[in-house]
Image (cartoon, rainbow, N blue to C red; front, side, top):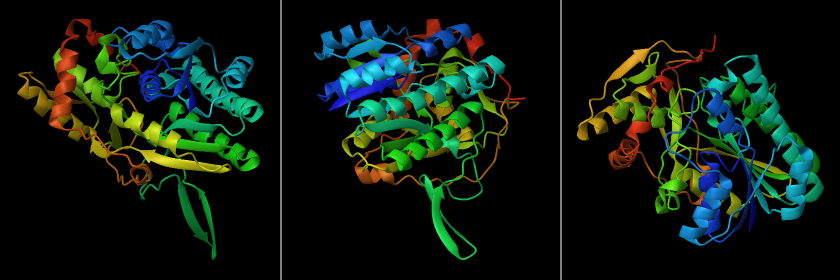
Length: 382
């Protein structure tokens, strides 16, 4: 297949590009390095040094033998994204090209405006580029389980049937996001659904939980191919952050009561989910929504797991509850459905002690690069 990856410099974008190329697909990657710029502006750089796309692509060619084409450009520039879609003629496009941080979106007006403008404009431009130049192209958009919030009822897989006054219909499951970033993802879904039902586009919207991990088949070929591993309070996901805190000797920062429960998945499963979605496209005029996670944990569960595994490596890991900088329920019901990807053939990688140990051992090799001042929360919702 001809696969276009937008936001290919990111934590998930680059591993996705390598996995598709190594599987034999033609891959074209795009990024404008927005995430690198705002990470630098907020003193939130990744733990490992990561080359840009041109150098990464050359390293990949040397160690894996495949070419990954790339272009630097902004998906908010409609002429640019139209040119890419017209000339590359993708059969599938994986859309990661968004500002990915909830805390960043809550810093202040400018950060909120950047998040809103970038995320919605990138999605809107992609939709119209596909409409104009690749009508049959399958759009695979990375959503987030955070769109749903934490309702006091079961979370369905994207859709819900409602009976009201004796009549029945099917609707998008109600969304109640907890940050501006997550709200932009809700708006993405609404935009896509409008254009799917109006123009017959084919779209898969993957509601992904927080991702953890460093190891992929391709990244393990050369340390320079590792994903952008953030451990700070702004761009670091909770598992990755806890692992670095354990290595740095910083108590694991549990926000509030620690009962916040989410669905998590290994980065290897993200790659598998994207591949399964691409290999099994929906029909024209269908918005397929898949909840993308493999296990649910509370923050307390995660902290205890990292503490226990850290102790086996002779790390003195402490757990500390701190005031919650976010506005969220700290104890709640959480029961989301997630059968769609399993039915497509996903074989999950679970968060075992061996998986956490391997991650801790890798982080230990970069211990000297840890900046402790980046770990404690610097952004408050209110």
